[in-house]
Structures are given as C-alpha cells and as structure tokens.
Image 1 (cartoon, one colour):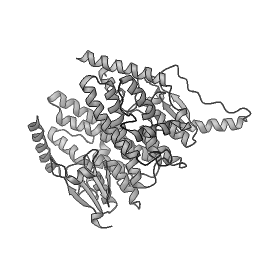
Image 2 (cartoon, helix red, strand yellow):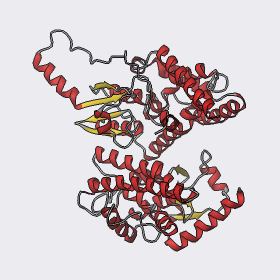
Image 3 (cartoon, one colour):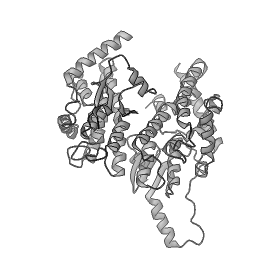
Image 4 (cartoon, chains in turn blue, red):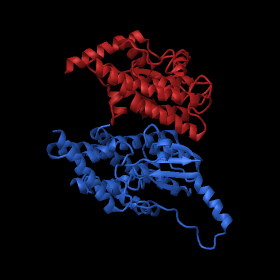
Length: 269
Length: 228
C-alpha cells in the first residue's frame, strides 16, 4: 500500500496512526486488605473482558464509556497502530482496526456494533431504547453521525480556502439535524445517557480540538444552542469525564495529522 | 393489520429495497409497494427521508424507518413472533451485523467498481478485489451456517438477506464480464447457497430476473454516459 492509500484509510473508521507510546494504561490495583482469593477471582473476571484500543481514539472511548456505565470490569490493552500487534490482527483480520472487544476471547469489532453487543449481554442500565421505532431512530442517527458528522467535520477542518467554506457549510447542515434531535431532551437517550449520546460523545471533546486545530467553529452556541447545552451536560457526567484523553495530546495528534495530510496533498499537486 | 398500514417506498431493481421486502415476506406481513420512478423522487419519499432522500423507506402507520439494514432489524423487533431474522445469541448477532456491514461497505462498492472500471487491466483488478471479498464471505458462510443451508441456519436470516439481496446484480456482473464470481472452486458453499436463497418463497418474487436487471443496467449506463 502506498502512503497515499494508507492515509486514505487513516481516519476512516477506527484507525489512528499515532499512538503515544508514553501512555501506559494499567488496571487499578485492588483495594488494600483484599484477600488473594478475591483478587484471583477479580483477575479472572477482568480477563473475561478486554478492550484493544488507542488512547486518543474517539471510537475506542465510546466502548469504555459503555462498559463503565454498565459496571463491567475490563482489561484495557493499548495498541500501537504503527506496529500492529498479533492480537489485534488475529481478532480483527478483516479491518485490523481498533476498537476490538474481546469477551471470553471472542472478538467483536466496529464500535457501534460493540455498543449493541455490550447492551445485549449486560442488560442492566439499557443503552438502547426498548421500543423498536425509537431504537431504529437511535441507530439511524448514530450511523448518520459517524458517516457525515465525524468525517464532515474533520474534512472541513483540514480543508483550505474556498473548499473549507463549502465543507464547513455541509458539515453544519449535518449538525443541524442533530440540533433538532436533542430538542426538548436532557440527553439523546432521554433523562439519562444512552447509545446515541455515547455515539455522539466525541462532539464535546474531540470536535472541540479539531475546530481549534482546523481554525474553524462548527458547533457554536449561537447556531446550535441546544447541542451546545447537551455537550456541557454530557461532559460533566463523571464516568464520561474520567475517560477523556488529555486535551494537549489530542491537540498534538490532530495538529500532526493535519500537517501530514496537507503535505501529502501538496506533494500530489 | 391493514395492508396500507405498511408501505415500502422503493424500486424493483434496488438490492437495498429487496432487504425489507424479504424481511416482511418472512414475517408474512402484507405491505403496499410504492415504486419510485427512475430519475425522480416523490413528495412522499422526500418527506419520509429528508436526510438522505433515498430508498428504501418503510412507513409503518405514520412512522418512517430508513436505511435498509435498520429497517430489517425494525421488522424483526416489531413483528417479533417466529421466524426470527436476527440470531438470538449476542455474539452471533454481532457477527451477522459485522458481515452485513462489510457487504454494504466493501463488497457492493467493489461490484460497482467493475462497472465503472475502464480498460481490461482495471476491470481485471476490480474483479479480483470482489473475488477476494467473496472468499472472505465464503469463510463466514461456513462458520455461520455450521453445516446448515443458510447463514442463519435452517432458515433465511439477517446475513442471508444482507448478502443475498445483491445476487441479482452479482449475476449481471458475471454476465457482462463473462466471469463466474460464485463458483464451485473458490466459493463452493456460496455457489450452492445462492440457488437455495433465490428459490426461497420469501425471495423468489422480489428477486429480479437477471436479464431484466441487465437491460436496466444498460439503461443506467446510457444515462450516466449522457450526463457526462
């Protein structure tokens, strides 16, 4: 694969080409005074659920949010996407991307599918609505947002000149649909966070950084007041907040990938 | 339920439209099929799918549901008595959904590539890419079917619908390019499965004949050339 072809795939779906190797993720130690039998049981239970992820990836964080909301213990494995591990390649041979959920060593891939799997296995605190029509609506908007809003926003941030204006307009049209969806609700899931909130949870943090790096405001309080209010509510939820990657690292990441993309484009002209 | 309570907005050649139609047939749900004319979009379509303006749309009562695979899941959950379309085990469901998305996102686009590719080399490369994908799907078929006729087991399921709906266009691709895409050597399981799928009562009346679809493809190609 040429660099250009690989780059084309870089932000499509869940592949992030820079995984900071100084980020170490280790499971928290068991509380002091815990008996060794209990610790052993805890380790076995944790060994049941593993997440292969990349610290900065918005697609991976949504999985951790879901597991934490359900109170599911898991082992997190940080993947170096520049040097993919055998465990990743074996568990996701088709796409070789993160996130991957391993449950009893069975791999489940594609972040939105993983959310559905988690919801179906651990039934407490449901993420998806029970009603089939509401479920269909939630799935529709999650798919729409992943296809149009994520790439629309990043595309607009990367673009320059006239192209940037056009891309921004198109991205904002997509966000306008989301503004309508949150009308009259605390969260997209209703009174509490649900599947669609997790799917859109990149907006408060990752989009914010993309906008700064791309010198562009897509979701502002004036044009999208309801969406803006939702982002504030969402980001304050403790479980959500605790999984967010460090902002400066995200800034560095997006800055690097922006100049990489632009330099590739320049070299092809 | 009155027949007019369930409508499908679509067009007979579309593989996407076929998916909800097969699902409704499996559930023995009567529906009204409202066909969109080629090259134009009805008021009802624009009203029911303002975001994408695309078919299929399922209208149940006054509720529109869009995106073919989302519609299939909605049908399975709404008319929840047997036969089930999605598997019951969460891991099997995730597997079926994964491959269904793969078919939509990778396989079908590589089929379209073959139509668009210009020149012998480009066509050959496009065909190879599709065949590589079909071989992956053959492996998925063996694992999912576990010796039974369908991806879903003894009866048609979600992944059968998701992939099977493309068989008409796959046959047209074979015809135009004089190549066998599902064959007994590379994809023996799928080659057999394709015939059983197309003959199934839930499928046979909605699967277009290859010749009719081939004629339609020629009309589309002319339209595309004229618009250049």
